[in-house]
Length: 596
Image 1 (spheres, rainbow, N blue to C red):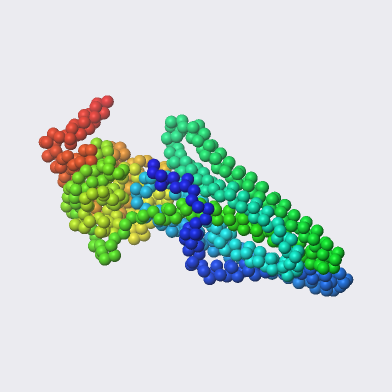
Image 2 (tube, helix red, strand yellow; image 1 turned 135 degrees about the horizontal axis):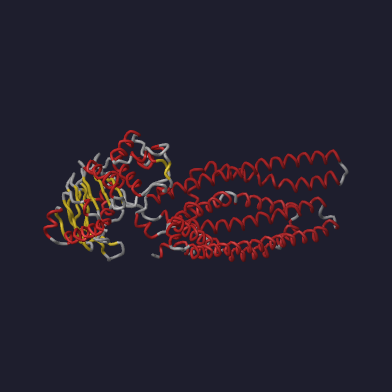
């Protein structure tokens, strides 16, 4: 697997201004709301500064003079300030998180949309579990950045500036004593940042590995149980889970150390304030109320500094996640049609391969100098041994992969000049391994294309003889099918795929080993439907069972990525070449099976 597949394990910079700008771009649609959130943060910070000042007034102006009435008045003002602070905190918390959630909604939509437009080659190199991590865990991490970080950081800055101003106004000399502990705090914060610099990236690596492992093993649970791999798989999962736990415990250790250290430093600052401030009170330079307010402001002073350290950690996690998300978003999607191209309403179905070469890996070509032409409405079959390149031809025709050399034409137009979406709408494809989605039978036939009416769905199911088993379900077409068609037989899934192809009524039909997984009885059920399905449309049939392609207009025989023979069934038998040998082998096998 290429190095690109393991981008989770590459640790980039602790802070990347380019990534940060791209992250903040998701807040652009909400600029007025961000401005409102910042204003609320400012007002909430100002309201929090009122408490110590009101305490000073209460002590120096009213308590020291025995003014009970004035004390009640200042108490009511304090209560109103607390209520105002509560309202502002509620509004700014709700609004900031509203912005963050909507920004993450936009990012999830964009990421999922981008994943759907990536070429198939990309998924050959990247585990599905890791892509799931991008859309879930990584984006959830960015929510903290855009809500608790990018916007909320203004509140900490406002509060710090306000506290510094209040300390200097109350007594600038005592303020300098308070600030004398800042070098210790900065050193502790710097050391903490160094320790946690890579830990969040490492945690994302761990959860990505767990997701990939879970996706693979849950999908293949039948194979795991069949070959008794439960114990070994559990041991591997336990190692992955243990690595994740160990990394998280390291962060807990760092936090458990850092916050008490900050608390110790803040307590040292308070002790210095009491020491120096007490002397000032004795000399009559400072009032007792001012000293109490100073202590309150000093305790408040260290809280936003701790919060800023937390914001830094959120930023570290966000940088690690955004690195991978934007690497994904920067992946080249499938090319789109030229701006001036106007596709016809319906493809005629003329297909031509001209000297096509293709390799999945560099120069290891699986198709070599392939050239043939299919006329509109013609039925052409492709046969050959496993690995001959039959399915690869169909993948190239649908532009799941791009040719290395040569060109493919549809109705005389190069595939590169065709709109990919319009091209694929013109093809109906039935695969050997049918993918059935979680949902109703009708949904799996129309694939949520509401242009296909219920009547068309029912008629398509009837034409492929699927209606007989569908009517046995309690809810018929509304019967829910589980993920990947669990609860349906292989033959039933195949019949649903035939109904799907027929409902979309494509001008070109591709059958890739479409009947190889069904029993003889089911195959007989769909043979007459296939004949009707292939009428008046170009049909490309990939098959191992040569009995299913005998009525093809032409049969193209592939061997080791090259075209070796072309002709009708009778013509190829008469040549006594590769097709003749394949036919004899299958005929002999069927005879042996029949005798047995």
